[in-house]
Length: 417
Picture 1 (cartoon, one colour):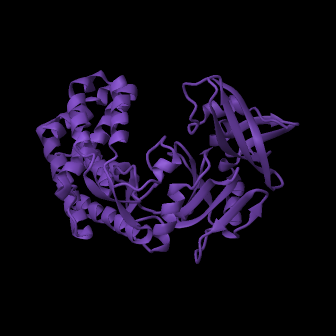
Picture 2 (cartoon, rainbow, N blue to C red):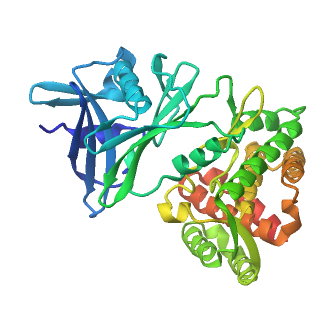
Picture 3 (spheres, rainbow, N blue to C red):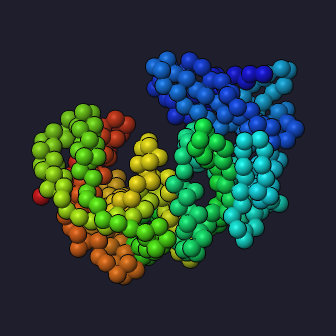
């Protein structure tokens, strides 16, 4: 029984094969969760020889609401119609009951975190803004994230949320449960449930609105955000330890070469950037587990506090690299870069520069107060991490948003002064 995944997959927002020609899409594993509901692992093969594996939950004959019908309908097989079960409230609720019961189905294991109550009776609804995964919100209590493109190994989002949640850190949405299978000898995570934050707003949305407002004042929020990030770093260091290493020079240089290959505007700066990175080869620094891809889109402002979310690490990087200890300054630099993006969307005006400077300083002040150490005290390392991030941004903007390329280029020039 074979569903027409090759036609359906490319139309999904979370499909990662854009720009490549899909040759095959075959279900290599089918796990029956109950009658009429299967978990399928689908291998997508491309003409260039590469392949990816995706998770698709299939409801048979359970047609979703009309607004999702076209997107959810996969096709027919053996006289039955299969639909993406993420859009089936009954199927989503059943998946939550499996996690709550720490059940098993074939090679799939479901696990609830200790001493938590999962909202098995809350009405589910699909979260429409998701891109690389699919999320279902249960009332005001929890959010289930279904991983679409799956890879073997320990998932850092589950791993770090579990550590932070069990330690009681107040600045994360607590992990409530997860489910996984096996890929050869390794675990293969499939999804996770975290506490939902009702009434929350993404940091990027708040900061951008403030930057556009001539009277916008975001500094108090930035101060509190800095303290929240410091809290997360402190908890991770306490629970998972720290060590000493050096700035990842070779990784930074490789990123520079990749970015310069598509962003010719980087060429005038390349030699000075290399010299800046080379100067740090033997400079020791403290490393630990960190977020790895921190920016204003990865934080939520609730009525009471800031929450740090999505601990998956740098998009596209191998799992081993995303789990590698690094300096907390990488996270700080990512947030400082994000303030510049929020400010400079409307152009490089004096007011934008002042807004960015004010909020960057407020963030660092809050971080210093909570951490007891000032990230600005290691100006050489902090600016190198900012420079590394800006180089990556230049390559990204050159590929996908050329009109935004001036934002990282302006920062690179400033950082090299």
